Image 1 (spheres, rainbow, N blue to C red):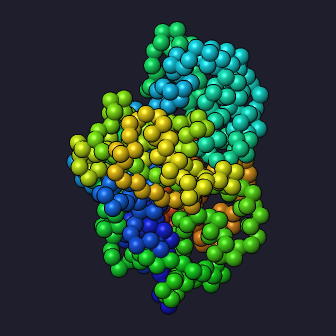
Image 2 (image 1 turned 60 degrees about the horizontal axis):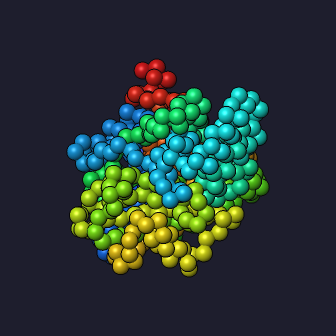
Length: 469
């Protein structure tokens, strides 16, 4: 039996943030466990048989935290990054429309443009409090934008009926239309592309997003990392876990970044089964990488990612991944790459046997790739837990589960540990790990996990101003 004061489950950004902070705080009794053979979690990267690098989705690095940015510079060095101006676009009606869609209606065919403008003007001044995300979309954007873009796109990305989603998660994630600005853009035929928290971002020069987290793990004491060994049982009363290798570990504090539903099942916490079933919705992510011969067409040379609302395209987003770093392809200048994402849920099932052919076929149909002969490599990955869905019963579930777990000295944090999409980017997840350690070791207040609006509203120095230092 191994005994530790702090046991951390999961070597993704949150678990690594916690482990790193335990080490920085001088705690000498901790262990990090992950069933994968290397660190990274959903922020891992892979190299396929042809030498193309792929991420588990379209990750980019932008941040609300000085501490996080300092850690990124430490892990890869100040010079280890490419810096990009975001170019995100919508592809529909056989044309490019700058993101956010609602600010660039002048790019639409005339009939769609007029319908969207009329609906937006009619919706202006609506004061009814929406019951769900679908009602919010229709009341905020009007029927035209809702029908043409917002509803079909969001149904693809969330893979759930939109009336099952709440509205409290949106914050800076959805651009609310300024009617005067939209009408001025339509009148002047002006592109409006400046909105968003990540209008600039950085990306590793080499190794994909996973290089960041491998570098973080490499800086931690090797004898406190147990990778490639996963938890098979959890006794919450005895504060003990058993690993697949046969090792038993007792702990004083458990910091878990595994999906909260899995934690409930593993700990035999049946009292939360029903509230978790109703409140903790999620979708799976299917990532399809397409390695290509030649160079991207001129219209994709500077673009970062594209959104696809129309139903004949199976993916909701495609990233021109070779634009992020030359090292993402085996022969820069002679090869390029597209990475496509397909959401999956019980409401939106995916035929795994046909998925690859469907994605490649849709890419060819867009005209971005001229010939099937240009495809030199394909890669696919399915993340069973991709997006923590902000369902209408989520907050009630978290209010019941999280405090009860903490009474058992279990602290569930991270993208699927806290189940809050609004604070589930890499910076948020990493800082949730840092903050829970600061709470347990130094008695400080957590911010990111419990106050997402504040976390996203400003840039945070270190130590946090709220801590009064």
